[in-house]
Image (tube, rainbow, N blue to C red; front, side, top):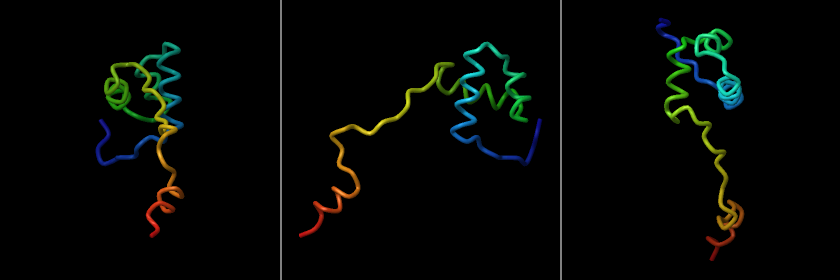
Amino acid sequence: MRHGRRHGLSAEQKGEIWRRWKAGESLHEIGRAFDKDHGSIQFLLSKHGGIVPAIRRRSHRTLTSAEREDTSQP
């Protein structure tokens, strides 16, 4: 177990982990590829039940920050 290292994963790395998981690689293989313990990989995957989370998108009805600034002006 690696103590004292708390380096998170970037969005690219998480995407690669999900790709490898869907391709059938084991947790140990994925962990070795990212120099992480297989428990860290399992934690990431189990948070979503082993299913790739949907990409978050802002609703088309939501105002942009520029539009919000425009409406707050008197």
